Amino acid sequence: MGTAFTAVTAGSRAGALTLAARTPGQRTLGQAAKVMVAVMIVVAVAPTIPIAFAGLAGLGFAWSYFLGSVIAILQTAEPAMMGRVMSLFAVVLLGGTAAGGPMAASLSAITGPRAPFVVGAVAAVAAAAIIRRWQRDHFRGSLADLWRSPGVRWLGWRLILLRVGVALIRECQVALS
Image 1 (cartoon, helix red, strand yellow):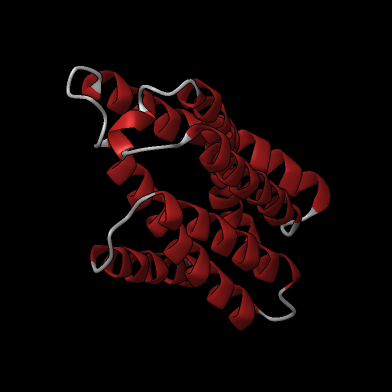
Image 2: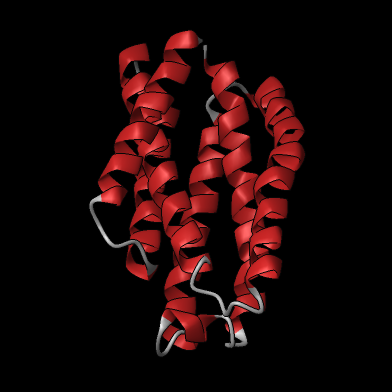
């Protein structure tokens, strides 16, 4: 179990360092969601423990990349809205873990340790599709215009659902070992 957490942490550090060398934004958000899909599928179907650990490292990478992109986008909000935007983000980040943990544990207990990764991959596919559609339909202009668009409320609930899916994955890492 310690090795699984180490793999996720190593991947997370690599993701954070990679993102620091780039300009995060809408494009990196979609890329990270796609990488999450791929690595969750790898973990779900991994025939051996080393392959699962490699997938977990990829998951840590994608999660840090995704989270860094979200934070960068949120920080472009209008100054008058900054406190509200960041507080909503904190609620989603912390609340998703509290809601997703018991669901992941129950799913893992009923179906086995691979199932939550499959559910997480489905959630990440949905998130990637939502991000792509939202970018196409609602995002025209600068990042500051993002917070004035009607799509923000639409995307906010989807990000909450994505966070719950990610929490499912994190909680199921315990079940993997």
